[in-house]
Length: 125
Image (tube, rainbow, N blue to C red; front, side, top):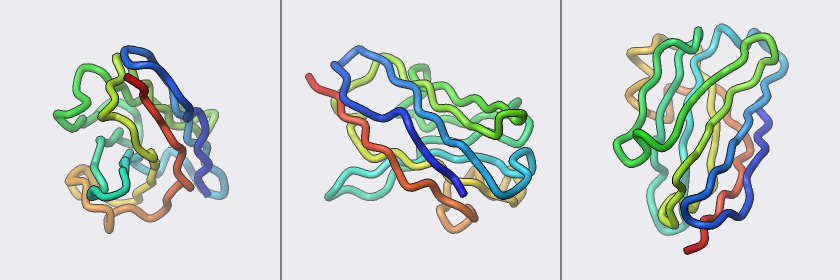
């Protein structure tokens, strides 16, 4: 089970940190992905962090502004979002994959086994 928290309303240029707490499994066995969705648009792949936290991939739209991290002792993944823009407004989802990095790093949602409930991030201009 994945439970997200940390969303909210922030002004453009501000920061937020999302958390994704895992339970019921061996967290360190899963790569973690982040997605976002805005009504009327397709779900967007934000990026992934591998099991150890060493390898990360970011979508071009967030590269340099967002940072993934994870704490395998606390069973939690994090998404630090800086320099937020109004176009970052979306519901953000974390997802866990037991597959190889080369598979889930493509961003195909079908390669993820578990999903969080989503948390709303709203960036005002």
